[in-house]
Length: 132
Image 1: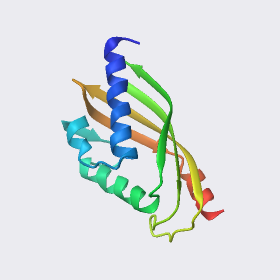
Image 2: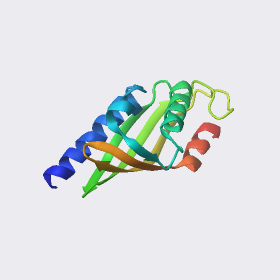
Image 3: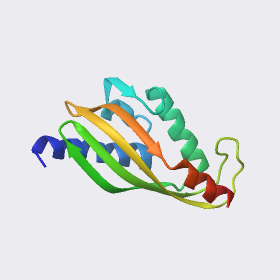
């Protein structure tokens, strides 16, 4: 891994910890570029809104980085999110059930800031854990 790739993975890891695990919505200003492109949640504001819904529904949620790979300006992360369904989630009342779901995130880092994000989550597994 080159020095740049190491710096990029460090940036992404710090963002995941601050934003997804720490619930620090203001961290988007520190880690995301001014021209940031959000390809999973439409915008920076959409990203924050979705993260807020997750935090409300799963207040004990924790994202764990399982694998992280960098090539040039791209960083690919495989994570697991675990938590307990304690709040309304997309109209579904709290079930008290635990989730353990895999998700992938692809970031593009330019000049030390995240410029592009797209994400995929295994919603089929999540819904089966909440309903099952």
